[in-house]
Amino acid sequence: MKIAIYPGTFDPVTYGHLDILERALKLFDKVFVTVARNSAKNPLFTEDERIHLLHQVTRQYKNVEIDSFQGLLVDYVRRHKAVAIVRGLRAMTDFEFELQMALMNRKLNDHVETIFLMPNEKYTYLSSNIVREIARLGGDVSQFVPKTVLSALKRKNR
Image: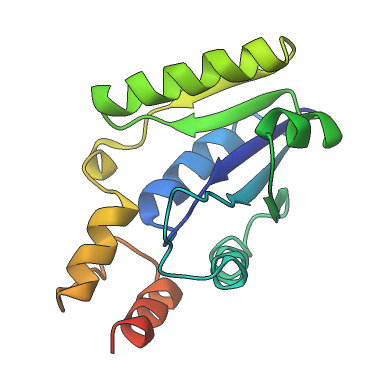
């Protein structure tokens, strides 16, 4: 069984994230979508809320597992016997950061491969940061996130 890890903050999960997940599911037998604990970020949603939202929006996929991790991603990959890390690339600015992370992960464990997937062109501008900001300012983000995420954003921004 070919297993991949799709890590991210997912704060909040967007249609862009789901697009990358669907592309990964065409390549792998199972994908772990893992909420990363990143001390450099101050998320809007708690880890438990992000996990709950991911469970809700990925219910239809039988070969997806939602999880979280702390520590080195390469250790998480090894524990789950995954063959690859999946990362989405929207623009060249993503590439520079993602390349650096992929090379470091390979340096830490040379058996870990990183697969870069590009989202559908309609999601290349989409980021969780932009969605959070539009929602915070009272804008309509319904075209960017699933309904359950939209409801959660509205509750957070009251």
